[in-house]
Length: 457
Image 1: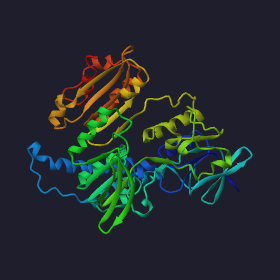
Image 2: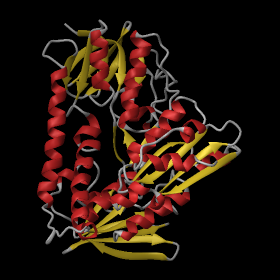
Image 3: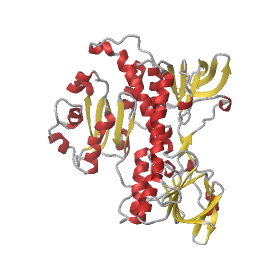
Image 4: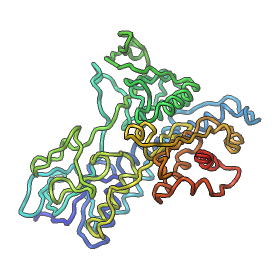
């Protein structure tokens, strides 16, 4: 007899798991289908292990700088396999903890296997989950994304590194070429550089971190160059081939073609939704451009009864937005329906120093024809930054000149991912920047810099 659920969730990511628990608690019969590992990209190869590895890289970086602080640390040595094992262990522990959310034959139920639609049965959706047929009145898609494979000739013949498999490459590259100057490429490029690799980042656009203002991107690039990372901007990796001692890349730019040799390749040119093998056509749902599932502000798809959450629904692809998606669906399914995608979404790039961001860039605001004021504060003028020996970077705020409301902020600084939340809360409160300007901040703190950036606007 077919299993019938009120809600079937496809994918055990940062939206799917808490959503399953919340809906079951509200009295719905729920199942979650996962074909591989619980936790999604964040737990298994993204946020959790990458930030653990970046932490190891920072320890090595500080050890090499120890003399600046009057400390003698000799013969700093990186044990790269142990660095990866530490990151892997933390990821595994996080993943294992998620299994406790489910019980055999319980509610919510965990169904192991790839899930895909096979049509409808009356008012229910019919799906195949690892060979088992199930029925569900509603389905929530949380199938996540995978790394884009760019059109580099002979790439399929190379055992290249990407965001899903980097933990499985225990050999420290001698010279790593990173194709892609976005957030993943920058974070991982700095990680490998601090581990001891030579690193060259090849970026097709005219600047790294293409969503940021040019002054922010240029400053971050200069910081990374200071650590020895090389950049090839306005360049494209055309082809790659094996050599007895490594790899050879053909790079094209305005000057023509050039061959570059390296030991390893890391591809980081974007993410592609996992929507091409869900059988969506059997229920009349067609993905939009690049496989995105179009949704409204309440995360409904164009087919009644099918929802999309997480990276596949378009818009910001972050763990925290996926988690908030679960709160939206709970509000819509079993709550008062008030929660929607009308939200302030911050994010961070976990380079060192970090880049914390929220809202519009200056370029965004000016393209919209807004009258703005720009506040800027250099971290080298902040007392705590000087005491920490972390004076690189600056804070930039974009303010509506008429309402005095904050439109956006970029924090390129030590602990920027934490500092940017001061601006996030100001924007969520819809308060003018003068609220922060008039506040008293503890001295000495980095938070004083956030206040200094809005003072005197």
